Every structure is written in structure tokens, then in C-alpha cells.
Amino acid sequence: MAQKVLLKKYANRRLYDTEKSAYVTLGQVSDLIKDGRQVEAIDAKTQEDVTAFILTQIIMEQAKNKNSLLPVPLLHLVIRYGQSVLSEFFEKYLELTIKNYLSYRVALDEQFRKWLDMGKDLSAFAQKTLPPLTQWDSFSDLFSSPEKKPVKGPPVDNKR
Image (cartoon, rainbow, N blue to C red):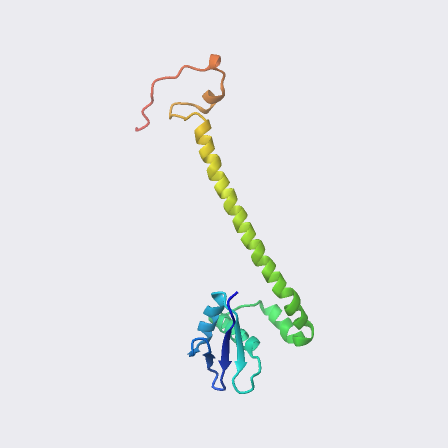
């Protein structure tokens, strides 16, 4: 995994990327995370870790743009029980649940792709092993015994 990007949060709400020596927006920090980077944000004055606050801000901005992130009943529970009950749930179970969901999703996508590839292979195998059908052959002709095979008639013009 790549090194953490250290951000300094100033009192004027600006974030300074110490790696690029430039100020960055919340959108740019979001892009860093989407690219697989880890970020750490510290308050420039107090040296306090404000990473959770910055990441929450990013999520809230995304929710504001889409007008929802979490269902309203869940938000009520978060406000009602706050730190006391839900902190442990979010720390231990929610992260694990999301990671498991993502890994199962990747595994399912891979399995589905294999099934599709296998279907393509079976289609090619069938083309090689089954005799080709012409427009005049009937399906029953393929499975009837040679001695009972009906005589084929003249071609029919279906263009009318």
C-alpha cells in the first residue's frame, strides 16, 4: 500500500497536502482515497488528528450532492444513541461487513464471468460436434434413425 498522504488542516478550513506542497479541496482528497491512497489529517495549530472529521466532511458533501447517503431511520438511531452504542458497531462490524460485501461481490463477478466464458466454450464445442442445420432440415430429422429418415422435399421459397 502507498504511504499515507499527510494533510494539514488550517483554521481557515483549508487543507494543505504536504506531499504536493499545495492546498487541496475535499474533492481532491476524495479522489486520492478513490485512487487507493490513505490520508491522515492533522490540525496545523494543535497537531490533533482530525482525519475522521475530514473524511466525515467528504461523505457529508457527497450526501448533500446526492440528497441522501444513509436511510433516515438509521440516521435517527445514530443521533439517538450516538457514541455510546453505535461507536462499537461502526468500528467493529460495519467496516467488516462492507469489506466482506466487496470481496463477495468481486468473487461473484469473477464466477459469473467464468460461467459466461464457459458458455462461450460450450457454444463453440456444440458447433464442432453437432451437424450443421440447413433451413430445410427439421429438428426431428436429426434424431430419427437412418432407416426411418424421411425423404427431403424440394427447397421452399420463403420470400413471399
